[in-house]
Amino acid sequence: MQQIFQNVIINRQELNSIEFEKESIEIPLSPGGEETFEILITNYGSPTHIHLSVSDELKGQITFLRDNPYVLQKEYISAVARIPQEGRILTKGQIYITAGYGSRKKGFSVQLGKTDSEPQEHPRDEAYVVDEEEELNSQKPAKRISGSRSANGSRGFSSFIRRGFTGGFPASAGRRTYRNVGGNERLSLNMAFGGILLLIGLFFLYFILPSGLQFKVSFVQSLLFSILFVTCMTYILLKIAEEG
Image 1: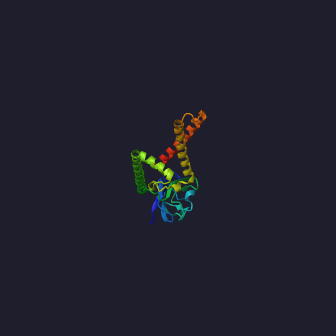
Image 2: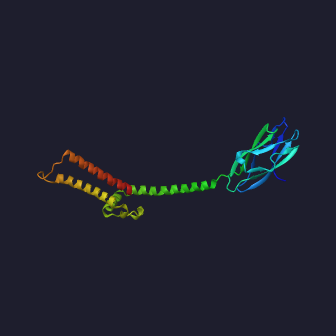
Image 3: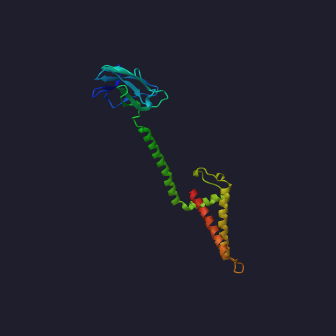
């Protein structure tokens, strides 16, 4: 015997009254699946015709073998529920019962399909563990780098100056060789070092030369030299911080 999903009671409270044993039913199906079920119609009044229909959401998915039965006392109405292979996994709609030749119409909710009741906790947990491990691994090199900075600051500065002139970079810094830096960066770095050396040389000449050979420096020239000196030093310090 087919499974009875709903019991519909008519004419019990009053003429053409409609009652449902369940407020809603669930038909668990997967795409491509099909199931036959029954609706029991119980009549407490005079024999009458009723009409069964579905809402727009369930059209084509629930079909009644008899949609306009004549009910004496009890009548079993067979229906077929199906979900197309490419159909929606879950569809919600209504099954309507019409009595009294259209004078009374009432429906109950139908859920056709399956819901994912089991949350996918394991994939999220695994992703969380992976993210936590990556975060810890990314923090460890940062600690070692900060320690090497505080312990070897002067040595790092001297090695950076040496790299600026010779064009070499250590393989531990991601094998970033001077050839990868490019000609423009090398030229800018050499110009910065050259400008610093030129300004330092002029500064010492100003105090070393005899008074007869000393040159005069105006305010505008002093301002330009200061700007040049600050610019070159800033560029070099930024490069030191970048390579550190």
